Amino acid sequence: MKSFSIMLAMVMLVTQTQMLAARNLGISLPSIDESLLVLDEGALESAMAELNELDAFLSTNEGVTYDDLQTSGSELIFNVDGASSPLGMDQEGEPPLGIPSFLWGCVFGLIGILIVYIITDGDKDETKKALWGMLVWVGVVVIVYVAAWGSIWALY
Image 1 (cartoon, helix red, strand yellow):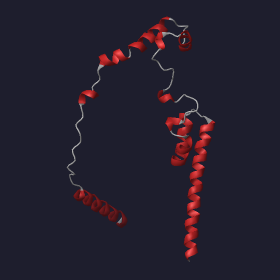
Image 2 (cartoon, one colour; image 1 turned 90 degrees about the vertical axis):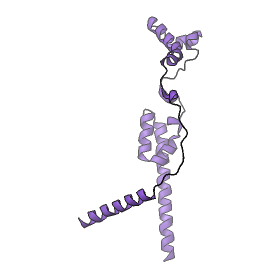
Image 3 (cartoon, rainbow, N blue to C red; image 1 turned 30 degrees about the vertical axis):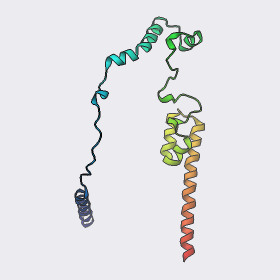
Image 4 (cartoon, one colour; image 1 turned 60 degrees about the vertical axis):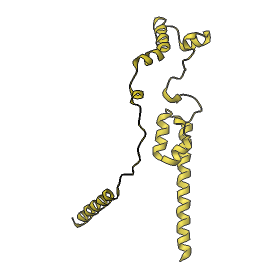
């Protein structure tokens, strides 16, 4: 109970100190034009007109696919990207979310390996790269740890 009381006293002391140390810096933030954040449904509808036209065409012609329209040079798909997933994650050879898998494993360890595995839908090559990244990080930590202890023992 004494330890808990001392811990609460320290928390209160730190909180009071931070409140007293906090001051107004006098920095004004630039104003934001709120009209940019309001949804303009007319502009959205005009931007989506081509996609709506393509959707209507594909609904009426059930046997036609995107590839059929692409090979025939149809104007319906002129400005439409063929990617089927967000952020282009389905493209071959692209790292997950644009970050190399090695760095996912090196920086985030097991969590990074899990993220790579989930984002790439179980791609074994990318998951191995993330695993190698984690192993390199573990190796660096072990080498630094051994060097630190070696230098401490060399002083004595």
